[in-house]
Length: 145
Image (cartoon, rainbow, N blue to C red; front, side, top):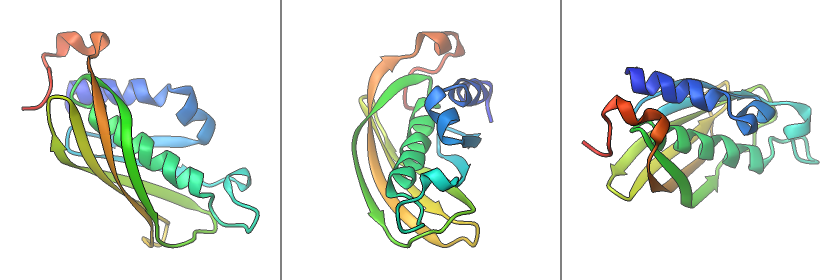
């Protein structure tokens, strides 16, 4: 990871929302990210399956980290998720890949898998760019290459 990507990772790791949900960032680059979460009982639905909201949350956070790795600020503009398999617990992992990074948005594909590598959900998310992030301004990154 570059110095900027390491700073983005460190910043994101202190986000209260990620901490509250037990989401850990393993890797962040301008091309993609890897996040994981050990599923707790309170993150399951009444049927004992991993709650769809947790699957959406980890994929959305993965997209946010990926988009932000260029030193700019982003918010989710749109996201379409497909729930493909039900998980029961253990650890889940989200992996993202940039499809297109532009001046005003970044389109990212994300997959969430369980410990056995089974695909639980897939999503395509558009992150809207709010502009340069002042805390990373000195890094010399100002958008897409």
